[in-house]
Length: 154
Image 1 (tube, rainbow, N blue to C red):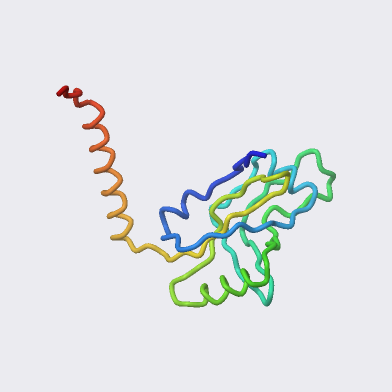
Image 2 (spheres, rainbow, N blue to C red):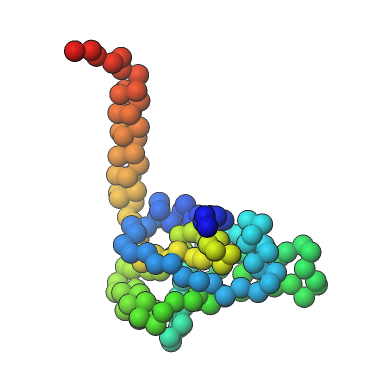
């Protein structure tokens, strides 16, 4: 069954160097999964934090579902992530090191379940961002020149 990507955290790729990723399930209520399927999700300011033997997703905004009753969900409530204990311990021990953080990269539907790809990441400095932008621009220029250059025959 194909994977339907609902939302991608594009800001994360600009702000962080991604070290390692893992797929996690996410515990949602009924009205939340309806909103996720409708694509009303924002991961812009979201982050992942480990508390004890569990991992939680904070500041992810899942809009209220219009057809739900007046007892709908809180849009920015903490949501529990579903991971194996070894994965939680591994990511927790690595994220404690200086400069590392856990961030969500994308939220998608896989086999009718909502999944979240989380990453262990290190923040980029300003000169790293400029370097990445310059590299991307030079690659675009090179591709443009190769594309417009007439083919040579032997």
